[in-house]
Length: 304
Image 1 (cartoon, helix red, strand yellow):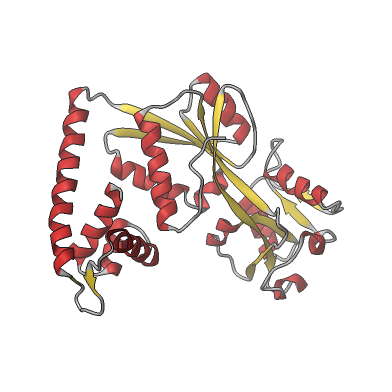
Image 2 (cartoon, rainbow, N blue to C red; image 1 turned 180 degrees about the horizontal axis):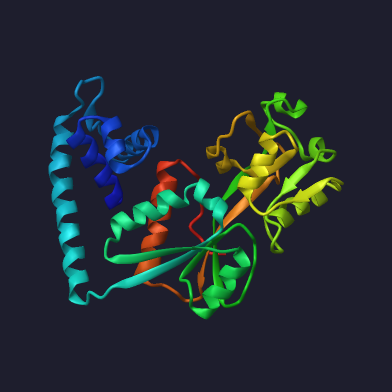
């Protein structure tokens, strides 16, 4: 049991509704319900009277609520007093590849701002290679990217592996395969890759995936960015391979179809300098896993 579980429980009690509590916490309702169920399972008791409107606590739930509020209040007071001892404005600068904003990075940064209001947080869009250089030069504190680039001066954390999808116009013959397609089905298509201004890149990653299956697409077209690639797809000019989170970009007649090959994934990495064990970085990692918990993502908290 962690403090965030107490925050979730207290919010549900005070809002008397899972839906309203989820809105207050800026999370979805189903993951919040799962976290409360996990808390009840850990305690071995029911905390709420199911079916009551508005939602009411059991006797044990009321007792737990009173003490949870005290614990959270004390924790906030201790944290606040400790920070005041040597309060100076600190800045955490994050480098990121643009496609990650369509996934969970925006939620993670928003939560980080809420939990660390004393920090100045700066976001800089840059490629993974640029992040490596910026980290070593001290221009950023952490990088978020999709490429598996190793450097002895840096520590890389695999956050999760995101499935890839095919973006196609609704009229495209492959768009009828709602359950999914294979890379072999795409080899003869016009495929838009991005970006076109640096290597290695996500475009390189996609080409390497085809090579793993001894496939050589002959009609590859590289464009500047993901939005341009999807716009061309929506115009019926071809298809594009994108991370699953790209589905948040909705254009007319644009369909997203799963790619079923086992290795059709895009890893997401967080990179920091070796031996950087600062409180700010640890707090950021905690925020990442709070969001992953609420989204029910599986993860491994090990640096690689």
